[in-house]
Picture 1 (cartoon, rainbow, N blue to C red):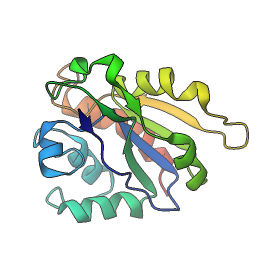
Picture 2 (cartoon, rainbow, N blue to C red; picture 1 turned 135 degrees about the horizontal axis):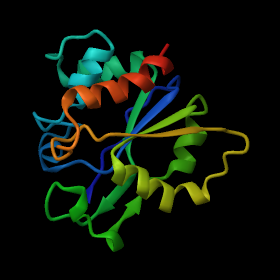
Picture 3 (cartoon, helix red, strand yellow; picture 1 turned 180 degrees about the vertical axis):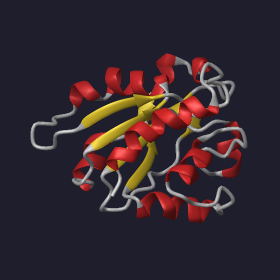
Amino acid sequence: MISSFAPVADPNARILILGSIPGRESLRQQQYYAHPRNAFWRIMAELFDASPDLSYRERLALLTANRLALWDVIETCCRPSSLDSDIEQASIRVNDFRRFLADHRQIEVILFNGGKAWKTFNRQILPSLDTTNHPLTFRPLPSTSPANAGYSYNQKLAAWQAVLGTQTT
């Protein structure tokens, strides 16, 4: 069994970025998107005109300063590798989004870093969410993972820019 990290979220966050669950290198370093070939932090640095060499603490501060929150859809699961395709479906336990969204009423947009996060959220979380008084916009985006070889870095950057370029403060 592997477990996700606590959310990174400021009370003023407007956008929540969701991955599936951390990979091996992220778990080893106890950092979101720690694999050196994952494009997430490089894309964030480019979008927010920051150095790609920021420390992890500075990277998290960059997100919160731009009213972004970061978390994972899956709280725990069994997965023998770092690939989302290896997640044992029956082992998935999801994070408590009702509570998170109740505590973060400013969230308006939820972005999904990859298909597994998007599909799991839609299947296991969305049916139980009441968004009547808290309307949300949902947008799947191409995974920043190096396993997503179907997209070049520039294609990933363009997709994330198209959404975050119009959503940030």
